[in-house]
Length: 267
Ligand code: ADP
Image (cartoon, rainbow, N blue to C red; front, top):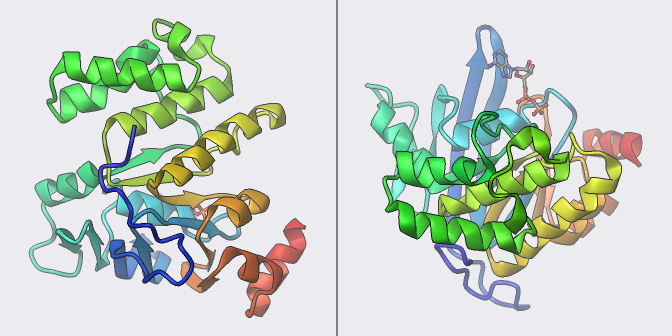
C-alpha cells in the first residue's frame, strides 16, 4: 500500500519544502447566523501531517468536512493536488460535480466510524471504490483483502460492524478510506470514541501511514501523538487559526496566550 502521490523526501534536514498537496485560502462557513469559520488559510505539503487542535466547537470538524465536500463553504478556495481548485466565492456556486471532484481526492475517517451497519466489513470497504468510483470489483476486492489483512482483520471480512470492537471498527474505517486511493487522508478525532486500551493500536496504524508518506490532516486531542507524528500543528479557536508551527515548538512554547491557556487546561 502506498499513497497515490509519493512524497519527496521532505523529512531530510535542509530539504526544500515539499510542493503543497493542499492549499486552503480564506475559507469561510456559517450555519445560519453562527459564523463557524472566519477565514481559514492552510497549506499541507505532500507527505506532511497537519494536526488540528483546539477547544470543542472551534470549527475543526467543519474544516475537515469542507475539505471533503461534505459541507459547502461560503467563501474561500480549496486546492488539492495542484489541479482541482474549488472557489466557493464564485458565482454561480460550485456544482455537485465540482464538489464530487474534491471528494474524490480526499477520504475521511470519522470519530464514530460511520460504517454501514447492515453491510459486512468487506462490503463496507468495497462500497466507495466499486459503487462510487466504479473500479473493477475483482481488483478492489484483492486490494481490500490485503489492506484488511494488514490491519489484522483478515478473519473478520464477513463480520458486521456490531460484532467488532471499537478499535476494529475504526481500523475498518481507515481501510475504507485507504481503499479509495485518496491523495489526502482526513481524520476526525479518530480515537476519541475508543476505550483507552484500544487507542494505542489505532494511533500506531495512523503513525505507520504517516511514515509511509500519506498526506494527512488529523483533528486530535492526543497531544503526545500530535507531537510525535505531525509535521505541523495548528491551534484553532473560534473559527480562526490562532497559530501554527512545528509541533514540538508550538506544544511546548506557544506564542499566543489563547494557545497557552488551551494547552494548560489539557496538560
Ligand atoms: P469542533 O470540531 O472544533 O468541535 P465543529 O466544527 O464540530 O467544532 O463545530 C463548530 C461549530 O459549528 C459549533 O458551534 C457547532 O455547533 C456548529 N455546527 C457544526 N455543524 C453544524 C451543522 N450541521 N449545523 C449547525 N451548526 C453546526
